Length: 290
Length: 278
Image 1 (cartoon, rainbow over the protein chains, first blue to last red):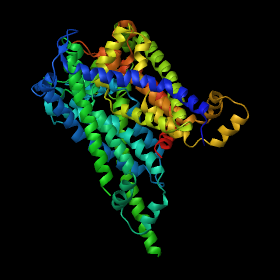
Image 2: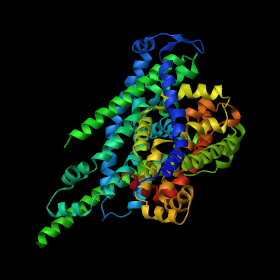
Image 3: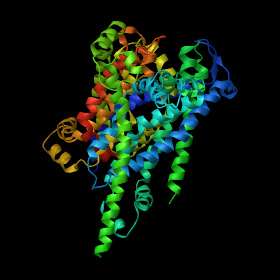
Image 4: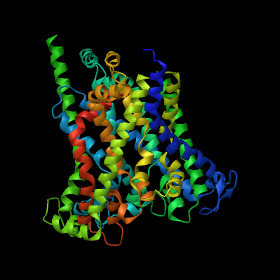
């Protein structure tokens, strides 16, 4: 369909509001943040300081800790969650399975919970006098309540469990949608040829879903590097900043203490670099595998 | 031959057995924290810590305490106001843009689309401070505008509508033009009514994101009169003594609207997502 000049103009008019909004509220602030990241000072007294902020963050123990934490959550949580979501989707894609809708709804339900709500639900479940401790004491495993949220390792594990709970169903929906576009007769043919369930999963399901697996991996990496609510409301970043995430630390630097906007902007650019860099690697790896 | 088929049937049922066990366990794990939250909202704080797993009678008492301590009505009204306005404006602007990117596409517009997709990579914290300064300079802090402006136009929604416009028959557009319909009338009267599942998916995504937003509201909506439900819920756990029953009533009110929307629209939501990743 060839467009005449008038129609092409109409198209520009239709997309202008959306494009302008993204330019004003996403790209312009990014440029502004980049400029800010080369300035330092407190509050509104800022002066140019070159790469000082970028050097400083690598001497900042709390920032390095937050960077490490984000990577711990990323490396442990994302693979477990994506594999689990894939297995669940493959199971639900079985035509002979009953109660499919019920299972799907139940597993997706956590995604309808707000981040603050689920952070508080898990905080309460794992509190000193919370339900988990109650049962562990009842079962004779513990004598007194274990301080899940004030010990670094267990606090991190609680965050990881909470993340898996909240996001597995979300990724599963993407895989289920992808599986619907795969002809079901391929599965039936494979079964008649004597392929085992595991072989079918590995040789058919995973390769055919690769583009969607890549999409979910990039989305999850992006989300994990930006974690905020879990650190803020579940553990409060504690004990002594050992579970704090980068976004939480940036928030503290910007709004909790005396604001150091330049330094905060530099750290947030670090997240941008990491997001872009990891997405690039994932796209390369995702393309190479066949 | 018969033995092969028998073996196949047996294998399938055995496989299904494992599926039922796994799916049941995961479903219970998924539902339990929410079920426990609802039950705890009806129990006294002591009973919550005592591991009571049956509904109690303290719901109204908990609600009264919550109403006394927090501005529940204000927060609910605000959250609905911000989320509804944002959803309506966002769906209108993004669907119009997605439609235009596909139906009127040419080299220039395809290039702009590519640049817009880059915005997906921008982490929200990276623009948080400049956005805050912008809102503060424009004297928009604690207004609906401050809440909605940064989230109206999103690459994800534009992409969703661009993708769904792809299967919209061009003949209809040509026919409508011959009948003398203006371009905006073709969009409103021909396109919009045929895209129910895409709009449902977009509505679910946008409303949930708006309702659940937390980092941006605590930065720009700090005034008591403009707080949202997630902010109220976070407030209930501040202080030395936490009344778990009261906290869970807050969580319940914060969770119900999104869960209800999800239940109403879940079928359309799945269809919309399926359509968008073909």
